[in-house]
Amino acid sequence: MAEPEKREDLNDAVEDAFGFNFRSLKTLRDLFVRPNAVFAAYAARDRVTYTPALRLWFGLIGLQVLVSALWGGWEGLLTRQIESGDPTTRASFEQMAGGNLDAFIGHYAAAASVLQPIIVALFTSLSVFVLGWFRPQLSWPSRLNIAMAVLVAGSVMGLLLMPMLAMPAMASWAWLSMALVAFVYFITVLRGAPGVLADTAAGVWGKSAIYTIVLMLLVVLSGMVLAIVGVIYAVVMMSAAA
Image 1: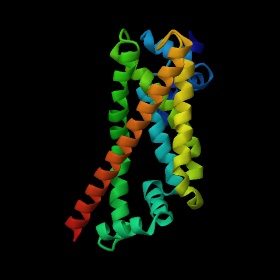
Image 2: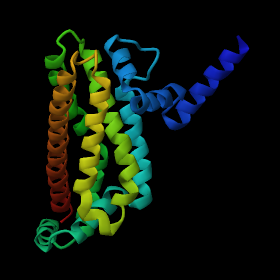
Image 3: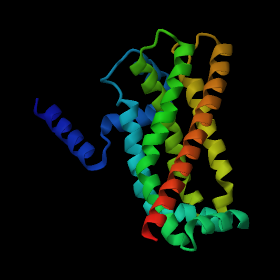
Image 4: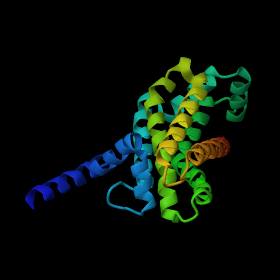
């Protein structure tokens, strides 16, 4: 019994330090290697084989925050987007900032850092209704885990693309990262759906396309809401400091 206990202790220590454990890494691997096994486990309410996808996604968000800090975090991202964007857009931000664009961006970044995982999780979790339409007998926890598993796969791609987006010359190519993330969503559902969300090839392809479109719309909508809330918070904070 000593060896299993040592392995469990190491597993717990890794999770305490990094937010991930060996089961989390196995879940990430299988999401790309054999997503159907992950989908099937979540559908069966198997809580042993794989890490709950919602927990895994929040862990990835934390990792993204750490990695993005290397390139200035939200402040650096927004600064690069404004500088490489249309002059009219920059003028609009400067007008809202009252001439103090750096302070405005700082307030916006503070709000976005806190609210991004919450808003994105809330909006994307609405995709469980689509999964319920695909397979009504799936329980709510099963649908939520499958939905977040797809989001996790896209988040891994987003994490890999972060160095590219950090380059000022690539700031205007954000659409490319969105296209690649959408492709990962589609492929993950396409490979994970057989026998879990659909029973025929036509059903698998059709449902994968529908779910990808819905999920991307929810992601874009959550981004718009985040931007609006961030701007409102920044304006309020600037007004309060004036």
